[in-house]
Image (tube, rainbow, N blue to C red; front, side, top):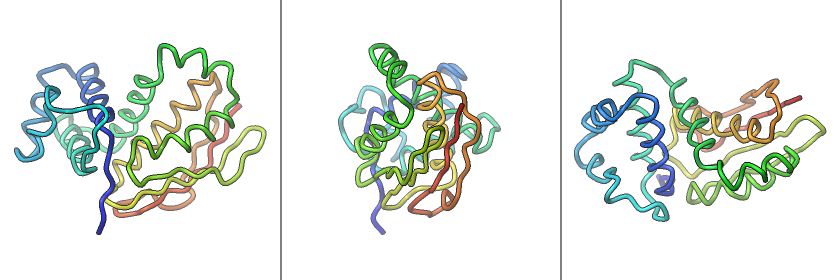
Length: 187
C-alpha cells in the first residue's frame, strides 16, 4: 500500500510545539521512545523544511508523545491545533483577519497537498456559517493523525477570529482510513 508523505516543516513544527508544551527533556524522552532508525531522521540538524518524509515519522512522533506524556489522541488534536497556529502567525495574521472563513478553507484545501504529498482537501459545500470538507490521503494515517488534522482545521477557523460551534466528523478519520469527511460550523 502506498503511504502518504509529510513535509519537513510539519516535523519541525511538531518538535517545536512539543518542546513548548513539555520542555526539552520530554522531547528527548519522546525521541528515545521512537525506534532508532526513525528517530535519527528526526534530528533538527538533519530535517529539511522543504523535503518530504514518510508519514510514519510523523505518526511515530505522535504515538511516542502520547506514551511519554500519558495522554491519548487528544494530544494529537492539540498538537495539530498548535502547529497550525505556529505555522500561520506573523505576516499571515493580518491575512486571516480580513479574509472570510469560506475563502480561508478554499485556500486551505489547496494548501493541504503542500503539507501532505498526494493528499488533498476538497471543499464539498460552503454556506454562510459552515463548510463541508473531505480530506484525502493515499495511506498510512491512523486515528491520531486524523485528530491532528482536526486540530489544524479548528485552528484555521479561529485564526479568522470566528468561534467554533461544531466540528463534526461525518465519516472516516479512523485507523487506516484514506479520508475523513467533516462539517465545520461557526458563529
